[in-house]
Length: 328
Image (tube, rainbow, N blue to C red; front, side, top):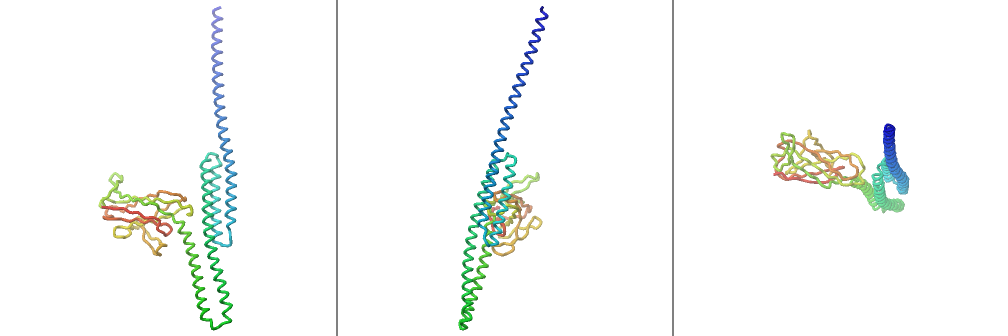
């Protein structure tokens, strides 16, 4: 009888263990299912938002193309700029579509869409300005054309006015030359507007120790290299891509410090129409935003003397920013 009771107790214990195991297993399965449901809901929400943004992006892109196309006219240079701007908008759209494809970069995609709107507004403003200047030039051209016609009609009827008409003809040639010059200036204005300005130039005189570590110095006899940092500003007119910055270090007597083996050379200055010697050139993949660009120039000990040094930075042939430093 005692043996039967003992067997029943063992069976009850085993049954209890099995039931507890099943309850724990069911709890784990329910927890996993809940977490999976939450994850699926989150992904579904992100994908739905991404799909909504794709529709909004396409609408924004098509409206932007329509706005630019409405500004197209008979001027080939202006139309070429519009085509370039449309291509840049297309690249921006493709970039945003890539961010939306996985549904993981929703916030970044929204920021890029806002940037796309700002970019379009900048394009429209620039085109409006150029159209105004072109219309003004057209008006002057039409006036000159009308004056030329009147002068030609009167030339045959009055030989006595030949000298006067010749003077008028010369004036027309001069005015035409002026129009060509103004056109060239307009093109240069566009180029000048795309120059990347340098907000600040920082120069740190250094000396390299035997350990290879550099330390900041203020006495000329201890300086063997310079750390130069230029801080670019934001320029939405400049096209994204590799930009070259030419750096001139002028010693206390105004001479350009230049060593060919360390990257020195010459560039054409559009401001004074001369070839200028530069100390070092630095290329940077510019993306229309502010950035810090740093490099070391290492002419070794003995290259520096006491006094005030000036640093000039050029971009696209124009002076973009200046800085300086003193050595005792």
